Image (tube, rainbow, N blue to C red; front, side, top):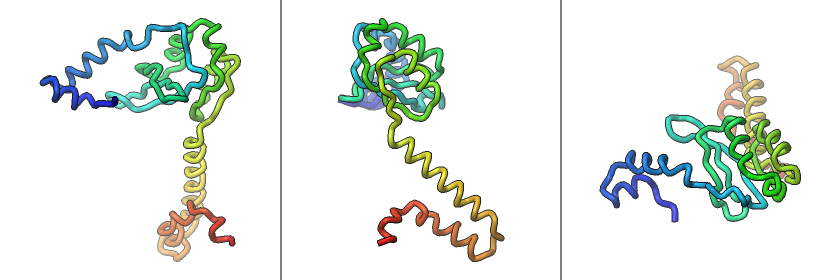
Length: 168
């Protein structure tokens, strides 16, 4: 069951920061079994406390959190994953990740039998940014008061439409 720190604090009659401090103090106990890894892993990062990015590793099958690291530095991730013996790491079959280049490097070094899967979300996000960049470059070639500039500016959603619908 997922429950927020605020809800726990309310139920226990303490502050949310007390709950977070308690959770932080038990972080090392979160994962102390280094004899098992799921066959399919997911790597990603998220913005956590104090606007810093944290690394998260999930079981791709049931989405169970394997670990959350305090930062997303290559050295931190490498050192954590090296706690697992090579025999355990060799059993991992796939690792899904975003386009972060050092994730790919780490996966190749640490998981010799794993296939790398770049997740769809990040590919679509990259394509959307590329289309938007081209649109704004074209738009900025025109005078700001011109009709063409206003068409590119106001109708930006048309560039993201499914064009197969219009070509029939």
